Image 1 (cartoon, one colour):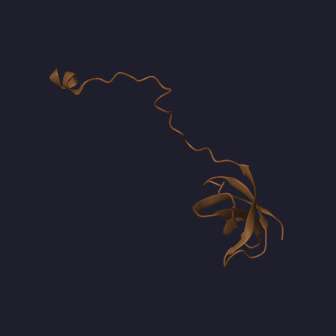
Image 2 (spheres, helix red, strand yellow):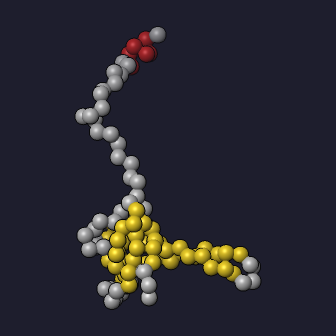
Length: 103
């Protein structure tokens, strides 16, 4: 077996992730390309993977009932939104509620 590349869809377990792997194949009857998705459980020793990361999986010996893959490397990190911290941005003055309702 050779390694596969997929997207992390779940990291709620300890030292394990679920990776969705897409593949395209040509359907002979319909003469179209069909996309199929397979989900594999993989071992992530240091819990480095987040949801949305693109990872490469390598096959390994069976580690549990459903886990037969190991995360070899993280190819691309997911872009996670981080709100700006309140200490670095200047505070904007707020309008008082009583001033807007008085008119």
